[in-house]
Length: 152
Image (cartoon, rainbow, N blue to C red; front, side, top):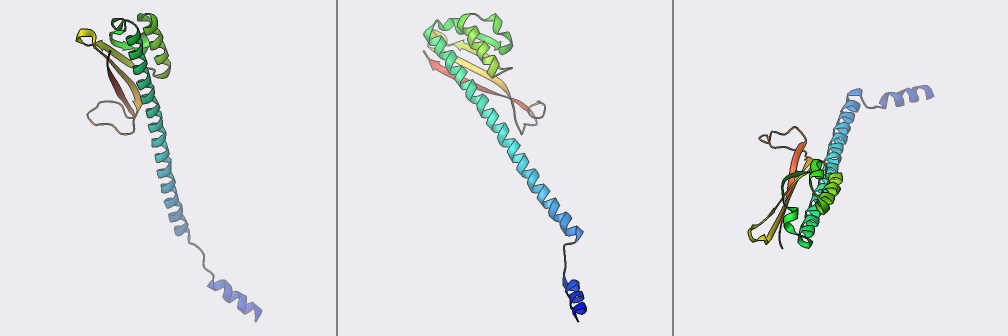
């Protein structure tokens, strides 16, 4: 009798089929890939926010340098962090400091008519997730800019 009871118990037990296990693994894999993509996007956004903050601080610093000195000494068109040697004095020091934090950045400064407004525009490269089809940039590459206009 014992033999008959154990064989009946074995026949009533059911397990997962291979197809069910494969479907469960597929669903789990899709979920993990989605979580990894969200993590990558958040890291890119954190990095871009850091670059934006640094550009803002450098624009404010240059404005303060122009305010404390002769603003005309800090006017340039088409400056880059690669050409800091062409600048002089505190302007060169500012550019060199920015070249460490925002490599590949460009800047432009101007003094408004009458010398009352000082404008700083900083443009820097950054990694972006989605691009405009009309932008012509390579995938994942873009630029951002920050403009600060200050009354002296």
